[in-house]
Length: 169
Image (cartoon, rainbow, N blue to C red; front, side, top):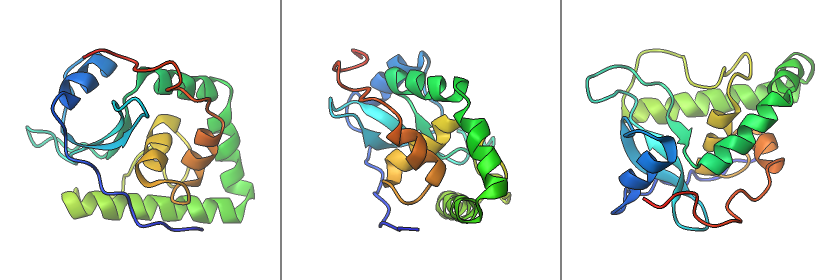
């Protein structure tokens, strides 16, 4: 597996919270930072706090927020990519090992922010593929080579940003 130095999340800029709210249709919970921006400059992936403001555990560290991106990821899910990748976990030891390593890296990163005392990470890791949105967000946050599920899904996505900004906050 190729490893890259993690891309540090970017502090929120003026207008980011409003842009994310417009993208997801509600006020974001636990918003910590922008993990990836579309070429138009809007957030496409955010990093959330491991605990919400009220202390509720929130184990998913990265969320895809751009509605064009999430729509295209949903199409991959509907086309059966999650099922295919879950099946590969049982038949492809290298793929399974890389996925298990992505799970460990995810936990380590989240626990460095706020340990939740659980080995539950996100998206079904490490035993199944449950949510491609989480995996693509993980790949966008860190670049390729960290999460094989996210890498493969992202490689199948068209340039969702091509039409310009997805929202006007």
